[in-house]
Amino acid sequence: MKIVVDINHPAHVHFFKNFIWEMEKRGHQVVITASKKDLAYTLLQKYGFTYIPVGSYGNSLLKKMINLPLLDLKMYNVLRKINPDILIGIGSIRAAHVSFLLKKPCISFEDTEHARGQIRLYLPFAATVCTPSCYRDDLGPKQIRYHGYHELAYLHPSRFTPNPSVLAELGLAEGDPYIIVRFVSWQASHDIGQHGIHDKVGLVKMLEKYGRVLITSEGALPEELQAYQIRISPEKCMICCTMQRCMWEKAPQWHRNVRFWELTRSMLIHWIWGISLKKMKNIILLLILLRGFVQMKPFSLRLKIFLKMVI
Image (cartoon, rainbow, N blue to C red; front, side):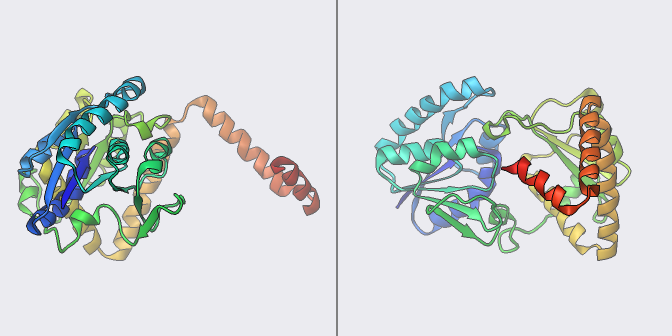
């Protein structure tokens, strides 16, 4: 069987790598197509995968709109010569479109509910969409829910063993508390209208109270944060993250709860400080209105007002 695996993000390399090795071991031919997205090409090379580069969608909405049909066409021209039996990807628009043109099935994996624009573009053309059972949206008859998460494809104990030597490369020992912070570029199609933490320096300084802070970033970091950047081979970052998860799970339950609520409280305070004065006034006004509504008597009056608001 000829299987096409489409890579649109560095995380997709981790997701599909064990599947690719398993299929090749069983005698199937796997063809990898990949976007130029951050470290995707670097990771594919680190794992020794041969791949077909199809280019980049760009870093703006206009560029993505222009490049979407161009990458569809480029992928189609490559794959029609190969004549694959099936195409697989994670939320891959081009894999779904090309599968439709080739009259081949496409299996898409999805775990991002707010990527609705992206889903609308590929769902009509995909044969099946696999989502975790906790996925909140209903994608219709094509959706298959499974009990698991994308991360288990490469972090399940049967597939992954943490390597403590990676911690030594970072100047850490097992048991040392550390926090990994990932800053994204917010240029993905599903990030339109979304935003993250504005005061990155303030966040890092706050987190330092709980352990050493390590940063991985899609874009350039402010000068004050460059000393925190992880400078190890990209495939080892996954090991570093998993070691932290293993140590967290081994911690006593009461200790985990205390640290969780301390961190949550500090992050909430940090978020409140980052709110603009105008937004804060609107939030306070809303709270006052809600308080007045709750205290309003009798209950029938509250119900009447509520029904007028929603009908």
